Image (tube, rainbow, N blue to C red; front, side, top):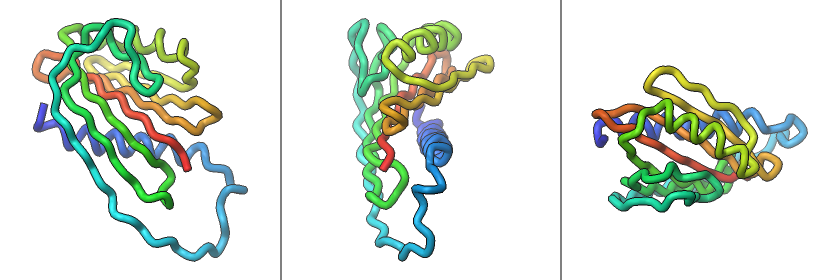
Amino acid sequence: MKKYFGLVVIMGLAVFLMVSCGGKKESDKTENAAPAAVAETQVKVEEKTEATPAGGDWRGLPIYPGAKLTEKISVSLPVTEELKDLEYRYFTTGDEVSRVADFYQKEIPKRGWVGSFMTSGDFAMGNYQKDEGKLVGVVFLDKIEGKTTIMLATGTRN
């Protein structure tokens, strides 16, 4: 999983930025605004291996029953960025991507999230918002080395 870690983090950040740019209104932009000082981004990574309880959730996103938590990532972005408080959780399961995708397509809307989900073979992805677009959630599913990897990510819009 380590060889895919960087790619998945970059994809996750890209999706967050794509989702967040779509929600910005023209009236929210300030013309001729002076550039703000940019603070340094901090990333904290923890590797874990622990089973998750059935019916659990994390930051409002459901956790696939029986999936094992493998990593936790926190990203601290400056207040001047579109998103803040980015958090990622990586899980693995022996179940097929299609079965895990079905679970997320059914369970996420039950928790008040609105968005879309797409599946293509051994890859699936969902982009969601809730609380009037203030909270953003992303789900990535991928088959890696015979296991389904689940990446859950959330962040808040400034």
